[in-house]
Length: 277
Image (cartoon, rainbow, N blue to C red; front, side):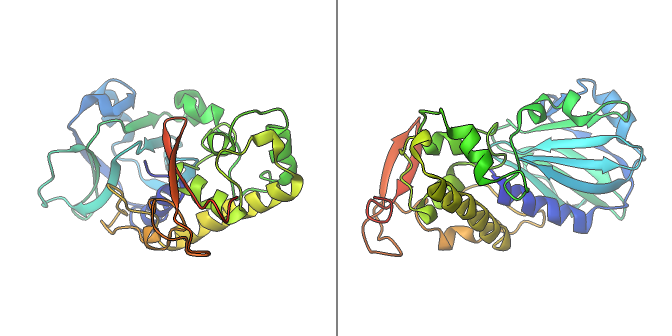
């Protein structure tokens, strides 16, 4: 699933390519891709003729502010891709929605697993009211609210493993399996450490590590292990410099100890038993 760096990469690409161009219509190829409204006709009536003023990211959600005051919302989920292509380029069978924008271009939503969703939020509604998942999101990692004090407050009574806490979008928005593993390595904390046992010093290291690995990945254009592509179809490059994720059995880049891979809460976790001992 695309995580914060991948979604941020897409958001930046969309802001470079799609702003100010009128939505001239399009095609819904898989009706259940529309989370709101359920009526395809109502969807096109709401957005046709509008222009995109700005794309924003909240957690793993994308929100396009339209000049009419409404929004277009997108969640890529596991395998979704937003691709900026010429309309005359044939589209693959997993294309779910096409938005036609000026100059014979289109924004194409491709989604192999079909879990991705698109919303139209009318001007008289807030994104949080229509996209209810936004109501539950925790703080953004790059915000001032993401502090040691915030982490202490959230973790002080939690007996959960810290890896599970980092994957909880109600605690920190946008982190997934890849960057939870990476941040825990950089902070020297085992993924199975009990959250409430972490000291303020460890939490400060963790807070810094989260921001550091996320920014590094954004600078690399995200991570491509399977489906992720930028808006222009380019793979992310973070995977080549990952500290532990996807490197089970390989030597630690710091100490040479083999990276271990274990299951925690049904998810794979990668860590160095020496550096995170």
